[in-house]
Image 1 (cartoon, rainbow, N blue to C red):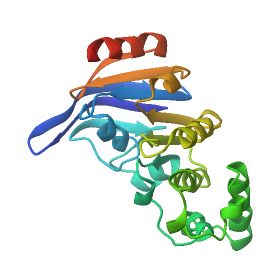
Image 2 (image 1 turned 120 degrees about the horizontal axis):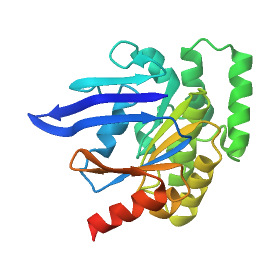
Image 3 (image 1 turned 135 degrees about the vertical axis):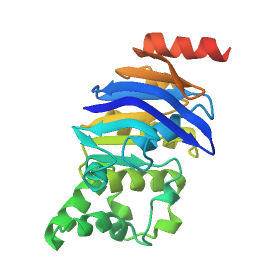
Image 4 (image 1 turned 90 degrees about the vertical axis):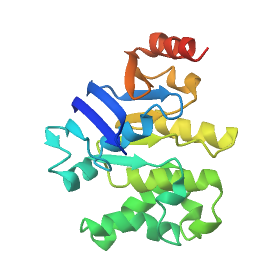
Length: 224
């Protein structure tokens, strides 16, 4: 369970988020809103990349101010641009990095890498240069790098922005098939229509929070 209580966030003496109160327990949650509405800042609050100016964010009872390391184990984050999270020059090295940091032995690391590459049908890329991957392959690698750490929640910040239609469909299928909670910022309203819940942000505030069949038309009406 993710709980956000009386959260405000400001930067340069300007509020980016105001009076956010939410309890997030559904498996698939969509976040929508115009550019600059506070969506990405909100997402970064959920795993402690950012901390609220006032208020609290708790993940399974752990406050992001006090338990940052534990929370980043629980909450994975997939950035809009995969180049921001791919670190190593070879695919298998990049996937091994986080596992080494938490003390996994070599045999377990090898098994986990093989498993996640097979899951996303990219086993042939194991020895490939990360710099030479296509945009879709990079995004799959970025997601695999989060999934391999087995977090309980994964936040996706507009993960298909730089992808063509074919690769967008692949990423959407990956998200749909996740066996853990996914919180997804996206402008693709059709994809989010199959989610459990959609939250609409406008100028740093929540203006709708409901089933997609209600929240998405509310957003469209505001943008009309």
